[in-house]
Length: 103
Image 1 (tube, one colour):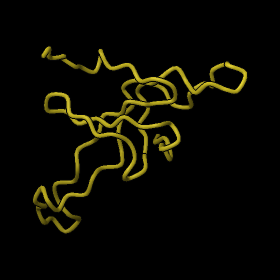
Image 2 (spheres, rainbow, N blue to C red; image 1 turned 180 degrees about the horizontal axis):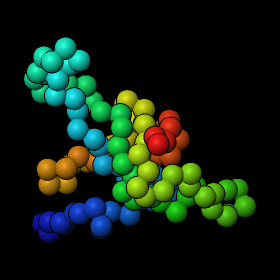
Image 3 (spheres, one colour; image 1 turned 90 degrees about the vertical axis):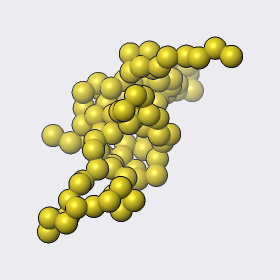
């Protein structure tokens, strides 16, 4: 069985998919209490590192993507597929699962 070495540069999303690097979960509460790994919430903010070519319309043309590489986005809590490359965590989402871009 052959193994495949994946990196961010080798992952190319298809259709209206977006590849997002997940931001770190909060280590402390607002009151300063340290959280164990089991109590941390899954982050919903990340940075777009790759985008697909866009969804196909009925006439065969591509719909342009609303997000671009480098955009910081807020996405649905349970959306997408979690992927771990090395020590970094990523999520592969459909564009419709992105709720907002952050300034």
